[in-house]
Image 1 (cartoon, rainbow, N blue to C red):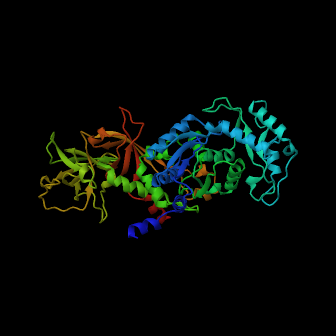
Image 2: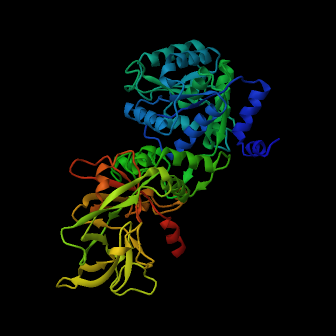
Image 3: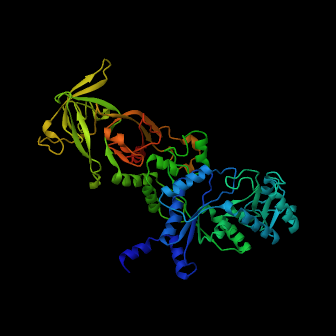
Length: 559
């Protein structure tokens, strides 16, 4: 066996081992997986792991993957969420074999329920939700069946038909499976299969007023689609026996459920309910707010599908929950953006520089590479003139010994241009520095420097006459707490007040006038940015995707 084959075999995850054994043994000739989101919100990065896993397995083993919407709760579902989910899956780079909906099977589910009633394995219960909860007992005490469980098959069939016909109000009756009220698995204690909901469904309209519960619909949907490997997260382990019970009693295609660890990220909440609350209560501007860990939010912030797929690949597929460092996701996006991002110069906090020995009214063009990591990226023209902007933080009037930026009497190189020396500091009446008077070395032009002068500092800059104004949104982590799962406080109290800092008017080189929404940029010495959808003809808006280095790691060391 070659070393490459040995390495590939060693790195297989447990699901790949199961699939390969199933194919080798002839249990299946091909595999079918599915990604089954409920359309009650936008997908987050945890769903991205499931998407990459399900579609990745289908691709690796020549099978297929369905996109199936588990739309069994009309109260919380919406076509907006359906559309967003489809867009997210495609953006991540995957295409489903079939677009399906649990609601496609409502008639079949009803037939399955009637089949169980006829077999004496389901009954209509008039108890309230509180009574049913009390009757179920506790993990250490068995439950107690009520009198409604003794109804005849004929009476149950009639009542279930009347439920379907809309004769009863919401909550007045439910259909329950008849299994084992003393089971150590609480899901076996006569679970609810159907509840009454007089609500408009986004696909079936008002045809139905009874809707199946997830545990009843899920396994049957898998079976109808002949899903060979039904992959869920670890919290569904206790549900698996019920999944198998329904399939066995209905004598239908035996789909099998496998569980893997979900993706939990530091400094984030991964609950769709909490994300929905952040949107509803306006802690963020929407599901695609760039601070959100939703796929839509990450996309708007400038993350690439390649970086998210890389994260999912790095963390692997395991059976034990863990907390993944947010810095790993940021590492993945930095690695990718460093290869593809176009370099541009943008001054965030401008300080004017006048080059006194550069002729007034004169300008020239200097050339600068678009991406030093990519020799094919080419170069661009940058206007250079007598008046420039540099960053205020790049000048100190009284500089320490190892300050290699600009200071009185000190020299620096302007990126792709000339070496300059600070000769004079101009201040206003209050003593604030308003302008620097500098001189340049004509023989020091980048690419043809004959000055013989070596300087340690290189600054980014923009030419005042051609600078364009733009708004910058500096996004950071939405929460201050590393492990939000173990945080005792209400999660909204842990929101980072500095998760968004806006710079209303930064100055950029004119090449950014041609920025496109799909382009990614490195603003030199500052970070990675992308154009935001709020951009208009009057105002360009850029979002910071990530800083050039991991600033949070530095802050944690201080703490």
